[in-house]
Structures are given as C-alpha cells and as structure tokens.
Image (tube, rainbow, N blue to C red; front, side, top):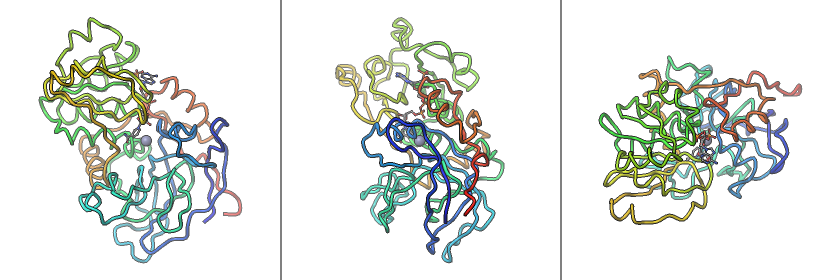
Length: 352
Ligand code: NAP
Ligand code: ZN
C-alpha cells in the first residue's frame, strides 16, 4: 500500500513529506487509517539521532489512534471500522519469559519499535505514526475504549503508559506520596494518573511558571527545583519520584527528597547522567531505577483506567505541516502539554 508521511531526512533539516509503502497484509495484520498522532519528545530525539540508532528517512510518531480499514484472514479481535491504537512497539519475539508475562517491552530479543526498528520478517525499517496508514500485527493493536475522546487520547499510548507503568510497578495508591520532575508530556500524565490512583502529587519544575497548571492537573503543590530552602524542607517527603527530564542532569537535588526505601525512577533521559554522590542512597536505603514504556496488557489496562476515570491528556491540536514549529516549541518546553497531529490534514498521494 502506498502511503504518505512526514519524515526526518537527516539530523538537522525540517521534517518533510515522504511517500513510502506499507507492507501487504499478513494473516495476523490489522491495517488502519491513522486519525491522530501525538508528538513525543522521543520523536525529536530520533529525528536528531540523539540516541545514535536513527536511519534516514525516518517517520516518527508512536502515539497513534486510528480506524481499522482491513484485517488479515487470521485476525479475530478486530473488524473494519473499529477504533484502535498503537504505541511504541509493533512486535516482539512472543515466546520469551517476558513476552509470556505480557512485558513485551522487555522482550529478551528486543522489541520492535514502531519507528527506528526493523521488521522481524523482512528486516525493513519501521516507520511511525506521522503518516496516513499503518499495518501492525494484531497482538500489538490496542482497543480504544468507548467513551475516550479519540482526538485527545493519542498521548496515552506513550506518555500515558510510560508513567502508568512505574506507578503500578511501585504500587502507587491512596496515601502514596509521588514527586514528578519536569511538567511536560510525560510529567503531566504522571500527575493525572497518580492523582487518579489516589496519590498525593508534587510537581518539581525549573520555575513557578506552571504552578497554577500543576494545581489544575490535581497536584497539591509545585516545588521549584532551584529553590534550595523549599527543596530542603521537602526532605524525605516522597515514596516515588518519576523523573521525566529529557537531557543529562543532576540527580543530587532529588535523592534526599525520597523517604527511606524510596525510589527515583528515570523515564526521561536515555543516556549518560551527571555523576552523583551515593551518600543519600546508602543512608536512606534509597534507589535509582529506570522504566521503559509498558507491556501491551498493561497499556490496555491503562486505556481502560483512563476511560473509567475520564483521564485525558491536555492537548494542542496541530496540522501535519506545523510539526517543525511544534518540535521547536517542545524543545523550549512551550507546550501545554502535548501536541497532537490531526492526520486529516495530511493529503494522500494521488496514486494511492
Ligand atoms: P517534554 O514534553 O519536552 O517534557 C519534558 C519536561 O522536562 C519539560 O516540560 C520541562 O519541564 C523539563 N525539561 C525540559 N528541558 C529541560 C532541561 N534542559 N533541564 C531540566 N528540565 C528540562 O518531553 P516528554 O515527551 O515528556 O519526554 C520526556 C523524556 O522522556 C524524553 O527524553 C523522552 O525521550 C523520554 N521518554 C522515555 C520513555 C520511556 O520509555 N522511558 C517514553 C517516552 C519518552 P519543566 O518546565 O517543568 O521544568
Ligand atoms: Zn514517546
């Protein structure tokens, strides 16, 4: 199937239209028309090759909401017309212990990224959701619960699951004290989800500019991370800190904020971190951990949880041709709190 998307062609040029093929349907494949795609900071990292594994051209986008247009002969769970979603993975080995547990993101053979991956059968590069159509195997297709606003739900597929998963892993619930570092796409979902689980949430931000927003999102306060007095007063105040900062940074200001046995989980920076002193770790039996996205079963659970609790991202809808401006604004943290591309603004090539 011929389709069109927006691709990065190298590490510096603006994204531009790109015509390419989606594979013919295999027996277990679902084909969809993409309706909406969220803009994740990982898309920008990938366009710039910040992590060293990009290829060009590459079509980013892994917060995908669509409508099924065709299904393979063996597909049992989806029908033409169903509203579906795809997140950061499109395949895994499906037979290791992690896949068996529904933790495909931890697949022993490595999961296949929605973009920046290689098809497990043909080896072809994968391309993401800044495009008109997608073909994905049934096991990696999620069902959009009735009642979730399709035009706002896309960011749940990455920002949502990436924060929901550690909140579940570390058993957040009523009475938990959660800190969220960086109020962006992931951060604002961490706040909404933790509040939805009954936790008391504090935002840690670089300034007080988002103070009113933090409260509106359900947090009980915002701490300015450069305010030494406020940070000192918050010593031992958190059971869990979710750190969404997208660049190398110092952990030292945050570690003393954890209570005994508390965990700071890194979901933001992928790569080197600033050197830090282990004293607060040892003396408080504190931990530093990491967490990647979440499994398919947990992603479906998160979608259903959001539908039940009416939790949706705060979105700014953009046209496909505004993506380069959106990238620049995201880099300046000038987004409240997720850009979503209306894929109806991308025309299909005449020959399709
Ligand atoms: P985002 O919307 O740009 O938000 C990041 C937030 O971090 C900003 O709003 C800002 O919050 C803070 N920040 C930005 N630049 C900073 C800097 N130089 N120093 C300190 N704080 C800074 O990004 P996102 O989409 O939430 O993604 C965040 C990171 O998570 C990215 O690196 C992305 O690649 C990664 N990610 C990881 C996973 C995973 O599986 N673990 C999944 C998705 C994304 P304040 O203005 O409040 O300070
Ligand atoms: Zn993402």
